[in-house]
Picture 1 (tube, rainbow, N blue to C red):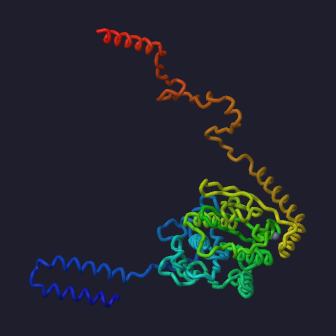
Picture 2 (picture 1 turned 45 degrees about the vertical axis):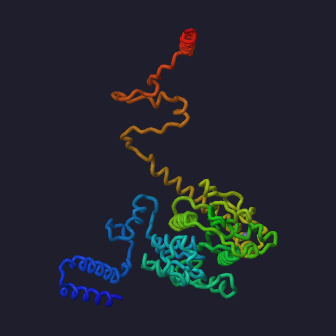
Picture 3 (picture 1 turned 90 degrees about the horizontal axis):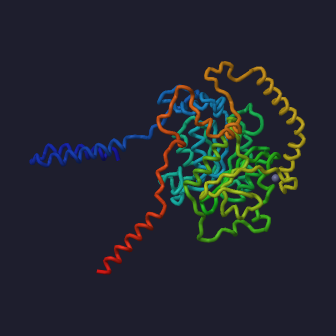
Length: 444
Ligand SMILES: [Zn+2]
């Protein structure tokens, strides 16, 4: 294409020299500049930055991590650069998974494992992330293409298979165990699994794998009617697993696949998907980088949830912007054998956990005593006042001004209310007067 455009420019140049009438010159010039513009666009290739060895906090326009490292300077995160040590597996690269993958990529996560067997379709374009020119590519490959352009520092692995098949499940387990990225790490090869799938079967497969591997994971979902969703943190043995509270569809023996109606598809909105992906990644960052509180269960109620009353007892409706949280203890009668094993281990480790917690509490108290008062030099004479005192003394405190200060405007108490209209007697008098006048007129 570039060669043809070059030829076209040459033709226009020679046409200009051959032109007998100079009045046509401006039109040719205009045409020539348009072709030059298209040529430039054809030549421009997307800019790819080179890899960055260390995350720097340097505040320069060319530093892709300066805004993230600022979290450390502002005391939100202790050591942001640790994010490069973490591996996160995302199962399901759809409306939620793809956006979660992009967020983690932009945050500079160390390694992402992406699982999906589907292809990009035009029907996905109402959501974020995928582009029309990627239609027909597998979602995992299209995701790797986009994400590696955004941040070449992230190690991306694409797994294109269905985790609910026997072979797929085995490959899934092996990939989660593999420790090529952090050989010295304890446990599995990944730090967290994010389930962003859209069906029960796949969720149960993720649940099974994570229970067997004693792997912490987070579940997410968006309702069929697109206006709500949920996220849930699952720690094997410690919190309820996905099988601990069986959804009604299974309890009643109905196969989920039969619930899908021919020709009827679930609704989806980029907004709800974006909200759920945002909540999921926010909690992922909090969990990995250890700041704030991680939501054990954050739910945004839905039509799907109506099918799962045992599992989701409360929820948020996006129409009301309501975000309740709740914790779910594991079910001692869970049908999942691996879940029961993890529960046993968790109970056995209780004394050690209690001792560690007591030790940490004592250390924290000792550190507090050693530190002394927070601010020794109270330059501004700031003192802490009990809330109830303020309420009891009421407006007197809020109205009092330090010596030497006066109010430019009167305070509310001094505001003169406009004089109320005189009682209706005047009106009655006026009416009487009017009546008299009318009678006088009629008498004439
Ligand atoms: Zn369970």
